Image (cartoon, rainbow, N blue to C red; front, side, top):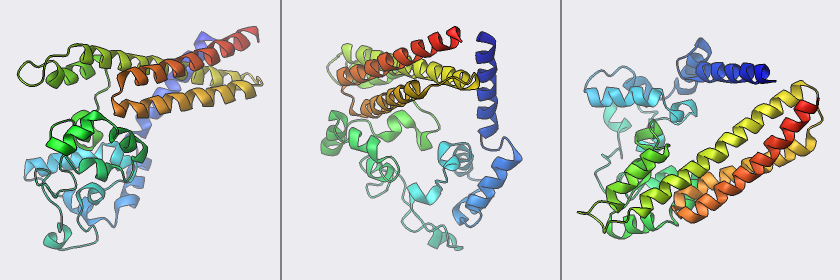
Length: 267
């Protein structure tokens, strides 16, 4: 069984590499077909200077946004059908300008076009309320960076980021318990994610063996939904609730994983 699981992991990793933008002719052909009539993409692909603009294009090229068909205009505005530079850049503003779709106060509304459940959670947070009322507080880019090409995932990174405000003597009253609890909540999410990925591998092995897994598949879907809900709830920054939700997903996932292991070993 161990050997079979190793093979599954290798196959999954190979599939991940092959799915990266530019990793194969098929991926390139799909990208070209998706954006062939988008003049924002076609023009910026040829721009080498200024470096800042060219670098942003290549950052997008290897982003989830590019994979999902989200072109420049979806976030920045502008007219992707225009061939004239000035017309193409109408309503494209620097993020430092208050009216920009990517200004600190407007990012959530812009991102909600695709990420509504996450934004619904975020606008419940004290962070968002502070951001709207006095302009202080994290926005989407604080954790997800430009185009989400870099995302804060690890518990240590989360704690360090939270410490920038919550444990900085010259900014807010020091509250070291907040970075610590945020780190623990992220650990709980990672643990739940790990056990559910383990259960997914076991489901694949069980199917290969021809086992009847209807009940396990239904329970697995419930575990996945619990984890998805927990990940969305992260954006409320209600740390106790987040960890509780993640622990619930972990417990459900562990039950599925253990049941599958028994069936596979028995077979």
